[in-house]
Length: 458
Image 1 (spheres, rainbow, N blue to C red):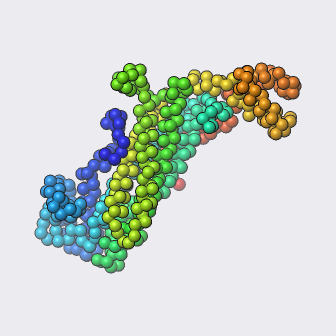
Image 2: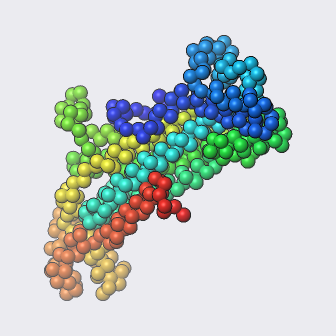
Image 3: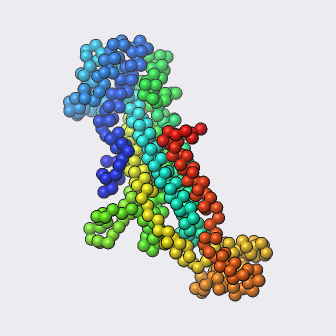
């Protein structure tokens, strides 16, 4: 197992992703590519059509002796030749002559891996659609839920929780756009032979590759060189950036669920145990899983970039690394996405605690509001100096901000006590937070429809 699993893994609905990642699916994908290759070559007259048809009919996992395949693998020390021998054995004598005709191991294996990843990609889009639906609901429900905005780990000025969620929505949609753009270049068929220049077939080799791509619903690699890996690196980088969005959400949930802050909490099922020694423990399991797997996926693009520079037309150290890294990236992303969907769906938001925290500094968080009102009379620079002195004094001397403001004759002459109270109310200074939350919720729903195959796509 390459991804970081935990006690949540087995109980989580996986959208049909995990079954696509097992060894049997890999072997069937190899067979699917070999079948598509034979079909293309049969239609183009490279091999007899009858042989091509027989290969297609035989290219099913139940016809392959996996036990004997593994025994042969131990002897020959090659990961793919034993598989071919089992396919040859499963076919009749005539059709077996044309199996794996004019291509090399990596043509089949790399194409098959991208075929599987393309199927996973479609399921990932459904998970992302559900997450966007969850975030849209959070943003709309809490468009007016006031809470402290925080910069540098401390209170800044008030925001709404709906606004905070809108930040996640915007970031997530950008990540989805990157992922979709990368997918256009990633899912490609490579049938160029040992060095990628169609040596075995000449010009008709391009037609073979195009037909294989058509049958597998993939793109056709412009230059089918085994040394080109940038499309895989791009996709893995896009997965890393996508994961980073959920890492951000998880870190926020993790820290704001601390008892001292208490603004949110992960869903809790009665009977879940957080510690073998501390009976009271309710831990942020989903957030922890997202954080751990995200940190691991960030290491993968660097491996890709280093390996991409390997020289010449093919190198097994490069191919083996990309095979492993792409598989690992998909597994890690799956674990992150499944946890993110559950986290965003069942997150408990403590609106009372958010309001309490927004009032924690008794209006001091609205110092900018006071300053901007004073700036209308005194100018920005002088207004900043006045409010700065008051705000620092309040914090050093543990005074009440409202009372300190009312002690100043210029401020008293500018505002009534009621106006000062309004300026110090966190609800009166959330800017366009409500509007942005509603706007991004609608944007999330539109993107959700696109991901599900709706009509909004342009």
